[in-house]
Image (cartoon, rainbow, N blue to C red; front, top):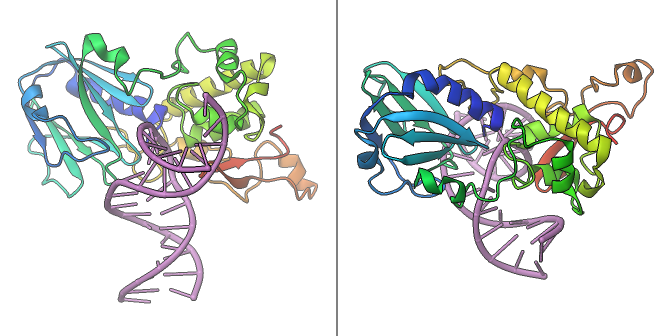
Length: 283
DNA sequence: CGGCAAACCTGCGAGC
DNA sequence: TGCTCGCAGGTTTGCC
């Protein structure tokens, strides 16, 4: 899926289309996503005005004029696209359409249906089961080396695994954890609790830099992600390690020239997921 | 609590 | 051509 930068890119793309608009029609073609879409979702949204479009972790948050908030997760393969009137005929994975009073449609497409949609009272938002317990926003002012070190303190699990735990820091996924660890020069296999002090500062700064650079590039387009306007993100061209097993490490160029056989990007499975790293540069 | 595998679902590319 | 296998940006659940 979309990790934080992709969700943020989608949010920014949807803002000019949805913010301040009234929903004149909401079509749900199938309700069985990761969890069922709430009953009467369409009826409850129809006629409502969207007063704001936010994001928490990998969730899009649509604030409605009746005090309700839609929590929308894109799962692994979810996409939002914008269509002028009339929208094209729906495909088999086009599950939800939001039709606004301008005639434009925002369409949710999700082949794997790992995405989810829920509706909650804005006053209860922070206590929603999906949001309660999430760690700090890595781009917010509550996140720094000290906060990260505190969240990792005592953890025996590998650093990579800990950073994928949304309770430690919210919004990172497999790509950006790999990239952040590379940039910070930290091994994915290091015990999480050993990251303190300057190492923690370095890691927090790396996370922020990778996420900001990715957002500036419109996210990463591997299989499914597109910006809401249909354009591809292009941060995947800037990956240092993700998906680059066997290639030379961009941080060890000189090593390749000297014939160091250790140099290069390696893939290893960690917690059932691919980890890409350079064992020379990351300790 | 920690760690890990499996589960949810579809699509795609590689290899035979 | 057609099949099987492994893999994919996430998150939860259940088991030891």
